[in-house]
Amino acid sequence: MKMDAIAADPLLAVTDLTVYRGQAKILDRVSLSLARGETLALVGESGAGKSTIATALMRLLDGAEVEGQADLSGAGDLLALPEAQMVRLRGRRMSMIFQDAGAALNPAYTVGRQLISVLRRTMGLDRAAARARAVDLFTQVGINDAEARLSAFPHQLSGGMQQRVMVAIALAGNPDLLLADEPTSALDVTIQAQIVRLILSLTRDRGASCIFVLHDLALASQACDRIVVLYAGQVVESGPAHDVLTRNRHPYTRQLQGCVLEIGRKDLLAPEGNVPSHDQMPEGCRFATRCPRALPHCATEPPPLAAADPARTGPLDHAFACWNPE
Ligand SMILES: Nc1ncnc2c1ncn2[C@@H]1O[C@H](COP(=O)(O)OP(=O)(O)OP(=O)(O)O)[C@@H](O)[C@H]1O
Ligand code: SF4
Ligand SMILES: [Mg+2]
Image (cartoon, rainbow, N blue to C red; front, side):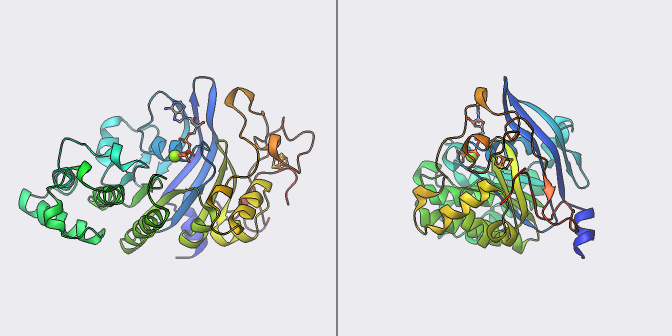
């Protein structure tokens, strides 16, 4: 399919997603699109709102007010559908792998029982067929001795194995949209990278699309087709991975890129300074308090997300939000 056709028929189109917790605006008019079969990385510092986006799309956010629109092809606006319809979509059309697998699995049931019950519900399989499929899925996600592992309780598995179980559960109903929140930092960095690659290769094999939450811009650019960079709940830059990594225009992305170049220095992944607290957030560009290129009006007037190349203005093209770009 040509790029224009893909852009005209996205799997998911999120428009002006805004989330409030009390007075605090946790997400501010977040817009993003996802093509079929595409992997999109959401990148940004801790607290940027990455998990909030994924959880809002699944309609699993508690205690928050949500505005905006999120159209999933063939299903309608995820933010407006009746809950009964969301129950049917979860697991079948879309599923989420949570940041903390230990907390997402039920400690009272074996992992096999949890996977088998999802397979029976989403695929309508009988017990024997679901069990056979569960063994298959465990093998695909790299769990050795899959048959025996079905009888393990979550606490009997390592953090990495628990994440693999979560991946198997998320893929059980063959969803066409997977939301993957990066494995917790409690996991060894090498195991985290293995799980990221596992999720991406399994979703690609199935022709599914994936929104992947990542801290790490370098990993995002190697592993994903497109990148959305978030700062304090706003999209500051988005586009094809190569453009965002090597031709970025937003000062925040530029700083993140600088950090990435310090290979192996995980502690340098955040630029200097702190994100302002929600009661002191600038009205305009939220990066104004840390930006070396800030102009007087930056803090009061929000910069719109605009195409980097005026000839390429589609929702999948390179865009950034800045009054005084690099
Ligand atoms: N349950 C909650 N109650 C109040 N504030 C919350 C809650 N969950 C998240 N927040 C706030 O919402 C903002 C975005 O949080 P979110 O968890 O989406 O960030 P994140 O980008 O996923 O961060 P991390 O990389 O640490 O996972 C943060 O300011 C956070 O403090
Ligand atoms: S809009 Fe202004 S403050 Fe914000 S990133 Fe651009 S130059 Fe910096
Ligand atoms: Mg998170």
